[in-house]
Image (cartoon, rainbow, N blue to C red; front, side, top):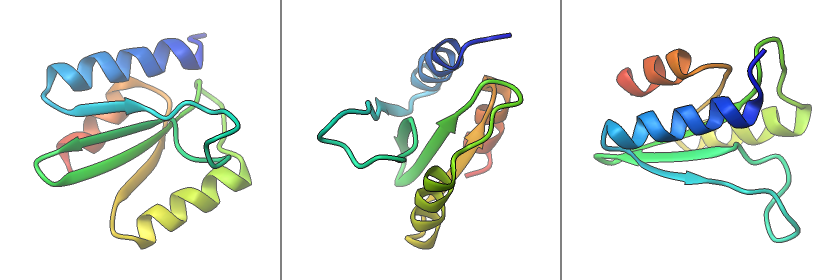
Length: 92
């Protein structure tokens, strides 16, 4: 089974190839806990992705932040593969 890091790297690499501006939101003491892993921007579209390995689930805090991001008018989703991420990016 793929590691989250492997899936995240694939999403970031492929998204950049498709022209997205991509940022990894690294955890740490200066970041708000529970924010999604990856921020993507392209042509006034903003997407936040929380990456999990297949079968993984977002924590309640992560789901809370995803809901707040959506309430602010942006796209935020939990994904477990590049294929899922790509489908979201194509439909934003």
